[in-house]
Image (cartoon, rainbow, N blue to C red; front, side, top):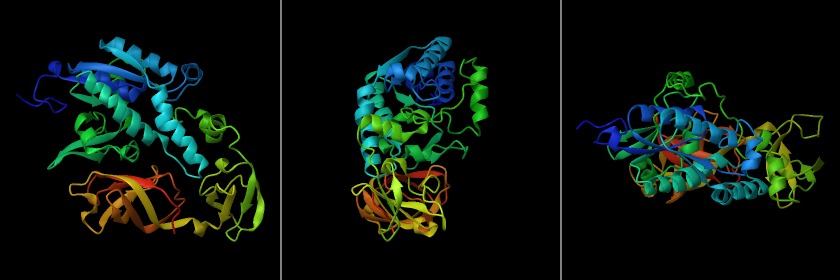
Length: 375
């Protein structure tokens, strides 16, 4: 019997797939497409934070409006839909660490932790409990068959590629996951499919904010989660000379230039955040250049074990919006390494992800978390 579109040797009608539905156009199209192909689809939407607050906020993942939209899509296409209350898990696994790491002067990426600890761990286990053959999502990334099993590859559309946010997907999770949109060349193709299936979300705008951070104001969220955490202190230069005052370290990010309130002279940038002494350290632009980056919690998706070689000559991405750059990754243990950037980068900060890519292909080789200041 020929393999079906999800890679199973049985008819779609005998293949159960759980689709993680955020209420947006991407995951809605995945669910509709698979239902149209005849798969046994179950839609699941996660309620990740306070529903009352969610109802008042538009444009963020998993808000009340989005739950309603996901349910409407399921009704239109005729498959069951469930809403799971993951609020406590989300708070413990994502929001608490976000607050603590921000207070420690890091620049966290909570969407990665959400994929790693909630969607691809807890929800994936729920999908198995529902006896699903696989779980599908609307992420723009590709799962391709390689000589040693499933491989993770960048999306066909570099503008939509979400590999930076999915680097911590493990090999065993990858075996179970499917990404039906990864091969599409543009977002307009996705919207065209939504219109083809008559979905009510066909023209719904993409969400921009982190779902629990209204208006992109991290500081407001931290103040609410950690009352009293915003304390004033000194803005100092690289020699420790006081140049001014700040209203709280959490209001600043590495590489920031505007809004420092210390005008005059050459442009100054935030180079380091010293949370213990409540200091914002500023310097010239060249002080932001980083060549050696220590990382840990590495998830390796290469064919051979990570630390059996002295170094890996690969490409790395330190910010989601920048293209991969050439680097040498030198393992210092099974899940730790020092990354040498062949071209120094500016604005590298603890808490960011460092994602690995193959030099000569679209393959994603995993990545790790930046955990200390660099040279």
